[in-house]
Image (cartoon, rainbow, N blue to C red; front, top):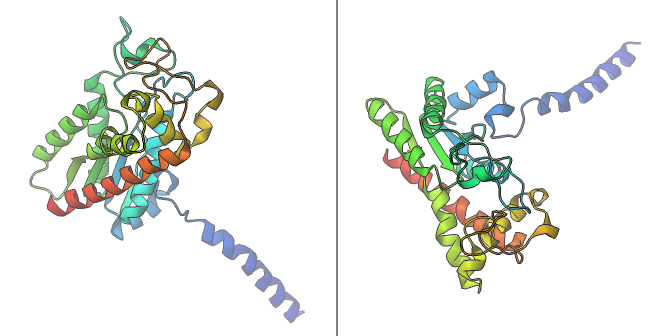
Length: 269
């Protein structure tokens, strides 16, 4: 009987062990952690928090409205893991996208959500204040959309002036977005793609990035060309030759440049 109980206990221990190991997820996302796991991670040196800023907007008939949010989420994961000492905040999905009355910019298309610049900046500011309170020292704003980069810079400058006598800094890392407008474009042009085909919104570059990161957000059978100044359905470029292979070039460039710039910013703050 004694041996039988011992065997049963041993078997139960074997069953319980994997459950105990699974309790702490292999995740860099703050929202996947308990507050005690987060506290311990910060205490162990994970004092950099990435704040991915996306946006909910139209990207033509072939790409889902959540493109920027999904892209910012997945790229931040790669960047945080490469850094080794960083965690990732929830994606900020509501951003300035134009006026409502009259509707302008992407607000002319159903599904786009906009905020006034001042409210957006307050959202960023109080996210940063929250992270400072709980022990993060470097708060990195990563904006996946071009229209609000100035807001990221303004918030970082304002808080850094206020916190000048503290060890905490906010970094508006515009290099994260700039890569998609410079190095990535040059890499595609070097492979024979024209500026008009690469496009500025829902074109070859934009669509290829999404195919590399999450192809489920792309409707391949609906890819068609727009013009240099866009068209009625919101496509600025020609996504028909988009591919995951081309997108991976951009992913690698974005991650490498962002990691480098974050490391530099943290070292020189």
